[in-house]
Amino acid sequence: MRRRGIMTSPPNADLLCRIGPPLLFIKDLTHLRRSNSFISSTTYRNRESKMKMKQDILEQPAGEMWKNIRVELKEDVNTRDRDVAAIREWLNRQPHLPNDWDTAPIMTFLRGSSFSLEKCKKKLDMYFTMRAACPEFFSKRDATRPELDDIMTNKIQGPPLPGITPNGRRVTICRGIHPDLNAQQITDTLKLALMIGDVRLTEEKEGVAGDIYVLDAAILGPSLLAKLSAATIKKFMICIQEAYPIKLKEVHIVNTSPLVERFVNFVKPFLKEKIRKRIFIHKDVKDLYKFIPQDMLPTEYGGQCGTMAQLQEQWKLKLQEYREWFKKQDAIMANESLRPGKPTNYDELFGIDGSFRQLSID
Image: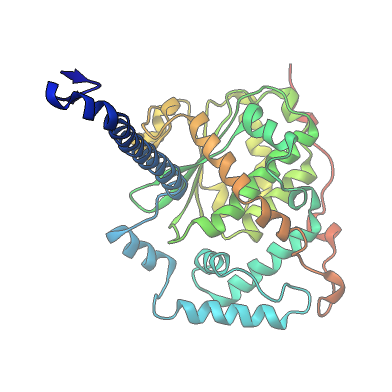
């Protein structure tokens, strides 16, 4: 007869009744082990998938693209470690700057300076100077704070895209998803943009040939523009142009309006001439395809790299992953009292006051 899947014959029934339960226990245990093994392997695969997602948040150049980027950045793989060492030695000799810093960010600064040691030193000095000069941007950078989390979740999206253009450039898309922000939220939005820049100092492991920014102005209206401080905007522009190793190749503005175009013209004096010439205003989003491959764009812009919300969530988690790093960086800044010669005068450095209220229109 058959009992619980075990085939027996009548003469051995009594024996099997006595040993059946242990056999069944062994069978059940084997099944449990197999189930646990399946669960463990599934858990492992899930963890592996999550790890892969983190690793793939920024695609790294490879092959011919990698070689072409080395040429554009003037990067010699045989001497670059020596250049990093030279910058470390220079930092150690500057009484007003940190004695040491992470290798990956130093390499990114060298790449952003086309491996000119003097340009790299100038940018690093300005970078640490701005950290001290702009506490509104460079303090309280815990991405788990409710006010920052709210901005990333409900107010603004600004993720760098995972892919790279055929000529080795990284694309970042910024857009508002809420029509109204207060003055502090605007400042915190700029802080978050610089936090992403800090994360990229490490995450751009192989370097890129430059940056492309797409600014979606769909919900940028007069009430928001009226809250923009000219001083805050200038500080942010100095950070972007002078303090971070960004090779800004193109800025594309989509979903524009006459008011937005007036705002762009107002901001242009804060920009270097070469950057002013790289600003493109588009009436149709599809015009972007002339500059950026369509498939590497988010779904909302006709592409295939995921939705803006998905990309934003990945970057929110990435900023939270760097929480302890940001805490340690709070104290790493220039000390003007120790600077050789004349200390930096912040009023002279920024030298602007006022706002953009004159841009408000009905």
